[in-house]
Image (cartoon, rainbow, N blue to C red; front, side, top):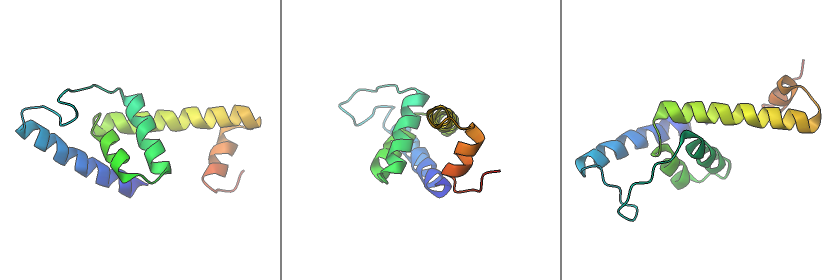
Length: 104
């Protein structure tokens, strides 16, 4: 997953350079829509889960790599907490189970 993230970040940097060369305009319908980091994180993670490289690349272009990393981390924390509550288990147990690690 980190290799995909690194590749997507590389594509993001290239797209930023291309956008700067075009004067800051995006090709999407001629308008620029701002996305927040949580929208980008949700789009990126769902695209990773569905193995959709085009959607991953699109989400990476919405925010800075640092913001996307924070958003993905926040999404992971919230998902683990929600699953832990649903399963009536500790977040640590849920996280280790999701990663295929032995529970302690």
